[in-house]
Structure formats: structure tokens, C-alpha cells
Image 1 (spheres, rainbow, N blue to C red):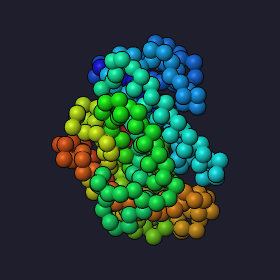
Image 2: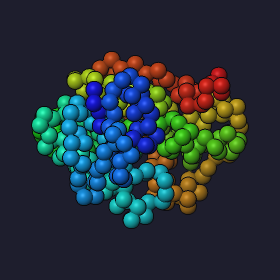
Image 3: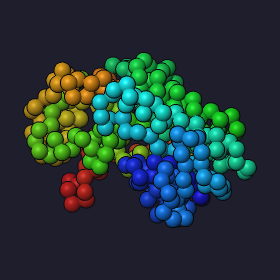
Length: 301
């Protein structure tokens, strides 16, 4: 297939484009700078434009672009950047797809389990209602921005991704150096649930969503059984052979992260009901396996 991808240089996007290219698919990376070759095309989410013919002939579009959530404190200015990068970007892609003739058959649009807000010990799945808070509001607007594609008859999947286990980026990318140095520990109480997913399973799930016509709407990309932060901390210590005796108190997290600290110490017990019902098989369903899979091959034990 010819597949267009936004956010192709990010943690998930780079792994996805490599996987697709390895299997012989033609990948067009949508970039916000001048294209460097025939495998790239320009788009501008601020202006709402996509380069002419960039999506022509594409059977699928995977939209992953968006400003990093955990990169810096959530000032009002930063929250506007997070909001605009997702809502404007998704609307731009969805409208461009809807205007095509013929149209791509599927849009897999990045989303997040932040939709569910704080869930405590309560398990939630794709049929659960939206939660409260900035991230929950953002995800609802983010997903609604894809409506032009859905209304044009394009199968639209909202890939609600959890915490991707990788040392190369995302929230977990900040954890690995601390744990490797023996400075890792539980965050806050440690009782909060973390809904994780191995990067390998994230890519496989995105490709599964591309290929399975029965999937549409929200699809949770998380391992089958979330683990508490205490359990994750213990697993990091086991796999990396490091002590995990230095808990980080909640007030310290708030001092560093501001409002985002509430989401770090909050609990989200999210399950991937639709993936499992469709027959998706996780390569690394447990936390120890997901952490081991994130390490360079010589260190996988």
C-alpha cells in the first residue's frame, strides 16, 4: 500500500514507518519543513494545508503528529500548544482526506488514554465515558476533529495509546536513566495503575488497525493487564538489576511538573477490549517482558 504518516520522526512514527517500509509498503512522510525527497510531502497544520497530491493514491493515513505532552510544565501557553497541535493537525488531515477522489479507505489517528481521566481502581475500556481534566477535554476535541474523514465514509480509528515502554522517548524515556543509575523509585503512593504497552506491540497494534476493517472508533492500545506504579518500579529494578528504594513524593513531582504531576500520580486502569475481541495477540503482555523488549538485544535477559 501507499501510506501517508504524520509524526514520522517521533518515537512511534519512526518505528512504524520502518516496519511498513520493511514489508514493502510505500510510505509518504508528511513534514512541516521543505521535503528532502520523493518520500516526503509538506503539510502545515497551522494554516490547514496539505501539499497537493501528497495524499493522492494513498490507501491509508496514520496521523501521529502532536507536541509532546510530558516535555515541559503545563503553562497556559504550553496547553494551547498541546491543544492546537492535535486539534488543528487532525482537522487538517481529516479535511484533506475527505476532499480526495478516490478517498483513502482508513485513517488511524493517534489519541490517548487520557480520555478516561482518573479511574482509580476501576477498570475501563472503550465503552467507558470520558473523564475530567485538561487531558480528557483535549482528547475529546482531538478525536472530534477527525469527523470530516468519518463523515466522508472513511473508516476512522482513534488509537488511544497508553504509556509506551521505550528508553528512546515518551514518559518512559525519562525513567530509564534514573533507574539505570539506581535512583529510580515509586512515584507518589505507588498505588496508581499504569496502562503500559511495549513499543513492538504499539506498532503491531497500529498495523492491525490498518488491516482490520471491523475496527473503527476508539481502540485502546495498552497491554491487557495494567500494573501499579509500585509493580512497575519493582519490575524496572528486577530487569535492570538496580535498587528501587528512593520514592519520589507527590509534592516534589508537583514542584517539577506542575499540573501534569496529577496525571503522573493519577491512576488509569485501561484495558484493550476491542483489540482483544478482534483477535490481536500481544508479544509482550506483561511488564517485565515489555521492559526487556525495550533494551538493546545484548541486554535482554
